[in-house]
Amino acid sequence: MIEEKFIFEQRGDTSINAGSVTWESPSNIALVKYWGKTDPQIPKNASVSFTLSNCHTNTRLTYHPKENHKEKFDFKVFLGGNEEISFRPKIESFFERIVDYVPFIRDYSFKIDTKNSFPHSSGIASSASGMSALALCIMSLQKIIDPQLSTADFLQKASFLARLGSGSASRSIEGPLVVWGKHLDISGSSDLFGVRYPGEIHEIFTTFNDTILLVDKGVKQVSSTVGHDLMIAHPFAEARFDQAQNHMRDLMPVLKEGNLQGFIKIVEKEALSLHAMMMTSDPYFILMKPNTLEIINKIWAFRKHTGCHICFTLDAGANVHVLFPDKDKELVDEFISKELAGYCQNNQFIKDHVGMGAKAISS
Ligand code: DP6
Image (cartoon, rainbow, N blue to C red):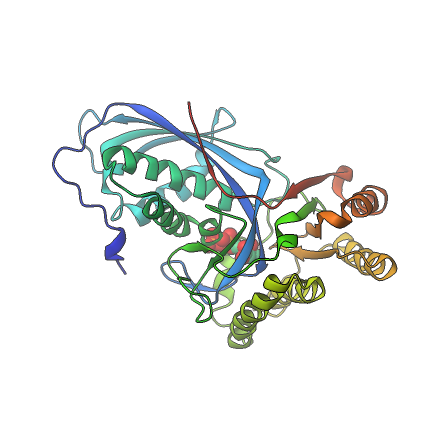
């Protein structure tokens, strides 16, 4: 499927000199989860996430016009200054997927220098921040070739390209809340790119914190690609996709009214539904660890006892994302360091909060 709107028509000589562009792009945490897709990276349901801030990837793309035009992509990729050949296949297939939309990538030799603000082995997926940062760098190159490109078109196409690298990356371009996937009640929503959540958002949701408890810092047991594939023949798939679409709809008045009880209910149900899908697929698997459950039970007891609006969500792993508004920050911060940190590997956790999206970094 080729999306005509995003095809870049090269007009005349587009050659530009060597140079570099840099973007810092954040991670995001889904409230309503994306789990299940069809080719090419089309989600089976709409999802919505908080854009984060402290967890981000910084990517510098250095480009030189190729001396002799070769058809193959020419790039080297470095992580924290060291060449990382294990990233090559993912980037190679990303370039294959996007080349129809950004054909000029064949004309340059690239050096991709990337670093994450969070430890590489933290169990935090870097694909959302990494792929969105690279997509933004490629769009900056397009903007140099085609200066008339508007900011709105720039951001939309950056999200479109990022999606082709990793679905959740489409939600890392802007903030504070981004929707990806068509939903009839959400105007402008699309399966092709993320859009800033267009509905009304109560101020309390712009004060949300996400403290990520690093329960298991190991490499993912099951890649998200494999996980998404298992939804194809999953016996509960259709019910799950309907549930997610309904949660998106139910979240809209919750976000508008600042209904924290309603928020907690939807967010926790989503996290557990995601893991329920994993536990009931063929093959089945459990990504939660005993400490994940200990933490969830502690959060529930603390919430009951204090009345704080604290809740948890999970991504495809054992780490727990603890979500809470600023008004509860003092109490929750103390609770986390005194009572939850002990369940984390080396007592490690990362404090993050809702952010406004990716930033261009001037060199
Ligand atoms: C559980 O975006 O990592 O974090 O499109 O195959 O790269 P690919 O998958 P990915 O899936 C993320 C799944 C999730 C839920 C979510 O972020 O919505």
